[in-house]
Length: 334
Ligand SMILES: N=C(N)NCCCC(=O)O
Ligand SMILES: [Zn+2]
Ligand SMILES: [Zn+2]
Image (cartoon, rainbow, N blue to C red):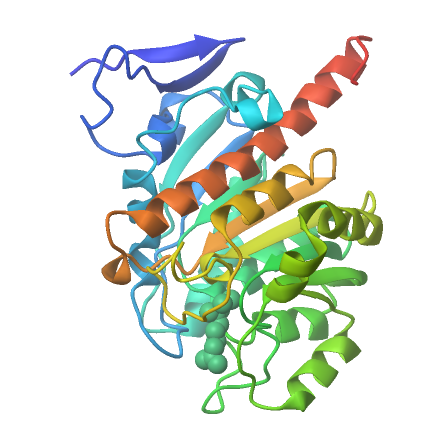
């Protein structure tokens, strides 16, 4: 069937839901064009079907396609930030990386190389799915492209700065310790948001602090509120190149049951979306959304949350482009 798409400012947008019912056809994220359907993309959305690094329930290898299927209802205008993101940047779905499920070291190499290849033309990357192991190669690629260690906001129930599991260095509980060891993070500007739940010991927090991480716990979000949290994060990060890593388990299991290591007492999807929206104007260079495991989901609760989180991340990228275009053309950029 012929696709009928929304087009504006020379950008090829989603399939028009007024012409072709939104439940029809193969899923791309938000029914956006595939990368091979556009001449160029400013932001590429790519799936990472990999979950060999998990310590508990597997299934995040199916996360990207679940988020795509759950994103069919996304509409083109984002009123929360007064922006039609797909009109300001060309966004395209680049499909999935082909990652070895039997060899973690090789998988990490592939992810890093694919991320570098996809951004060689100056475009940016938002990855969907996979377990949190994949943040390490994605951060390596992001810091190489930025030409310096990157700031990071890490939304997660977990610290993911543990040392090893069963002697393994590369797992979904250890990417950020490795990243600090490798010197690819700007340790003046890294923060966890939404952490909670039992730890192995107090030492986990001491190690984490030593690496440079600031912590805003799930309870801090509750007691301080979104506005104060956003303020603190913006101050800590300033204009540094910023990578955002979102583990969907940062949400309470009521908001995201479909994940591998759920912890009670999480933030709501409203809080997460509001914090992301509060980051407008920051120097975002890349992002991932990990740990969506559809086997434990119901009624696409987690898939819908993930698809909307991705939409507000895309809106941040688009807003950066809007501001840059406005200042280039001399119109005031608010
Ligand atoms: N979900 C992520 N990324 N990490 C959880 C690791 C929890 C653990 O096995 O102790
Ligand atoms: Zn994690
Ligand atoms: Zn987690």
